[in-house]
Image (cartoon, rainbow, N blue to C red):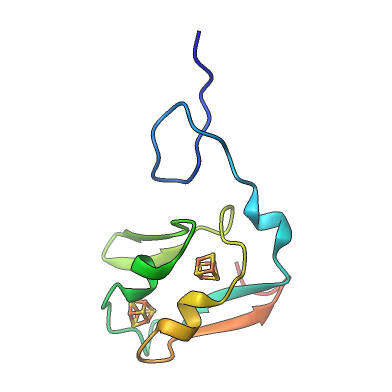
Length: 88
Ligand code: SF4
Ligand code: SF4
């Protein structure tokens, strides 16, 4: 019988879970006022932690490792890296 495990929120069954959230010291927070919904953050995130859901880009904090690549690549500087323990 196969195990039900995932490598990312988007992956199929049969892959490993990466608990990257436990590494994080900062978390990205999207400023919805500045976001132009270009999708670059989703494209660059190395662990597929950004999803497009209900017409918004959202960060899946269970998988985000806090690398900050999304904040660097965002053309509108709409993502702030905040110390862990901030807004969910
Ligand atoms: S890269 Fe920035 S502007 Fe583009 S969707 Fe992501 S948060 Fe919004
Ligand atoms: S901080 Fe890194 S892991 Fe987290 S959403 Fe941004 S690019 Fe993905």
